[in-house]
Structures are given as structure tokens and as C-alpha cells.
Image 1 (spheres, rainbow, N blue to C red):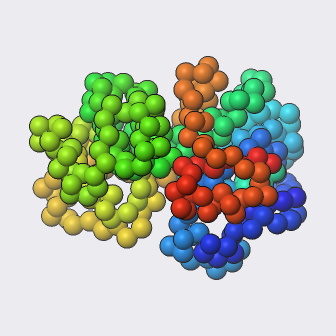
Image 2 (tube, helix red, strand yellow):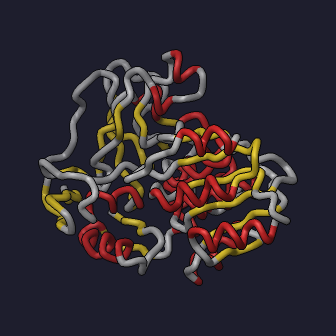
Amino acid sequence: MLATMMYGPGDVRAEERDEPTILKPTDAIIRLSASCICGSDLWPYRGSNPITAPLAMGHEYCGIVVAVGSEVKSVKPGQFVVGSFCISDNTCPHCQYGFQSSCEQREFMSGAQAPLARVPLADGTLVATDELPPDDLIPSLLAVSDVLGTGWYAADAARVQPGSTVVVVGDGAVGLMGVLSARQMGAARIIAMSRHKARQELALEFGATDIIAERGDAGVAELKKMTRNVGADAVLECVGTKESMMQALECARPGSMIGYVGVPHGVEFDGQQLFFAQKGMLGGPAPVRRFLPQLMDLVLTRKINPGRVFDLELPLADVARGYRAMDQREAIKVLLRM
């Protein structure tokens, strides 16, 4: 089968690989209905993460089960399923507390930019729909697997409340999903920080009430002006750089929460600054499995349309073009068809 492999910075190839097989009795094999490129895939693509061996790319997935191991009970061949990018048993103490992304058996999904993928711990990771969904909902169900689940977690971790003022730092796919999530949670004012017109327009479509195009200190100053120098009740940090994290901290009012989901690169904190800021922080890999049933229901009942975040669709054979498009900010998020 054709699958995506990364050999080094800027070196992504669609090449023939062996089809996955059941390796453990808790595995499932799914035939993907679609896959996509994640913003986090760009870190190794740009050389920010070392690559010591070829990487099988792809961790966002949905599709139809084609085979299961002997111990799998909750899903069966022929069912349509969505899974989390974090593999979990959904039974350990951390899972039961709602943090499946810290499961005692945690793995990170890989190899999903391909027609077939092996999913370990299938019972704890996959959620099946009652029936096969219509094709037009596939992009939105795919978004649930990571990008929507991560944006939702950012809003949940930031404790977005009805009537609150929310700032979203980052206009990539996760940031845009954070905007959508904050709107669903009832935020009255959602301020998206973005300087790209297409992303600003999509943020407004998803529920943003205001746009701040400035970055850094200038962006913070504009936010303070808009909030009478108070700051935001909740801040979603969806980038992972030092600048974006400092911007999030400065935008948050005392007593507020910052939900941070951008994979950190070069981020350091000053203990004195945190001590006197009196702002809470919660983040990390999103426990998407906790939110899967609710988010899938919102998609299946057509109450939300997160699939709008995909603005470029390509065949898997053209995956290298998709990476280039996202790297050069010519696309927000690329959908891959098998």
C-alpha cells in the first residue's frame, strides 16, 4: 500500500509499504476513509525535532474496521470508528479520571497517512457510530480525532464559561477549533489573534467576535485596550512557542486559566513571574477519548462543522505537496484521500 514516510527535514515521500497486521490481541485494523496532515507534523518537517530513522506519518484517523484481535470486544469489522491520536486502555486510574492522554499504557498513534492503519488498545481508543456516516461528514469526523478534540481540550482546560471573554492565541487549525469550542461552551466574546485574512474569516465563521492582528506586546496592548485593561477570563494557547506562551500569559487576567495545547518548543518560565501573575495553567496532550462521544454526536447531528478547517484536499500520492502547502501557510489543514 502507499503510505507517508518522513526521512528528514523537508523530505516526505509517499511510498509502498507493507499493509499493517494484527500484532496483539487488543489491536484493530481500520481502512481509513480519510487522513490529514497535522500542524505538529511540521515540527520534524522543519527540522525542529530530530529524525533518527524514517517516520511513518499520520495520527488523525477515522474509517471502517476490517479486522480485530481476539480480545477486542467493543468494535467489530464493518463498523465506522473514530479514534484518538493518544492510544489508551480507557480503564487505568488516569483514564478513569478523564486523562486518557496520560494512560498507563499510552502510545501515540502513527502510520495513519495511509489506506490502512493498526490501532493498538482498540477497545479503549476507538468509538463506533451506530451506522455508516454520509461522506460529507467524513472531514468533520476526522477533525474530531485530534484537531477538534485538542481545541476542545484547550477550551475545557481554560475553563471557558457561558458569558466569558476568551482569547485564542494561534490561528492554525487547533486555534480555529478552539474558537469553535469556546462558542459551543457559551463564551460571549471570543478574540482570535490572527493576521491572515483567510484564517480570520474562518475564525469569524466559527464564532469569533473580534480579531487582533498584532502579535507580542502589541497584541497584548490591543487586548488590554479592548478589555479595559482587565484581560481575558480564559486563554487558549495553540502554538507552542515562547512568544505565544508569553502572549497568552500577558492576556490572561489574574485568577483566570490558560489552556495550553501547542507542543512546546523553546518555552521557559520565570518562577517569580508565575508566582505574582496568579494565573492557572493546564494543558498537554489532549485527552481526546474523553470528548469523542460528545464531539462525534455534535458532528453527526450537524450542530457543528469542524471539517471546514480543511481548505486543501489532495490524493495521498501528493502528500509531499500537502506538507509544502502547510509549511508555507498556503493551506490551513490538508485532507488526504486514499
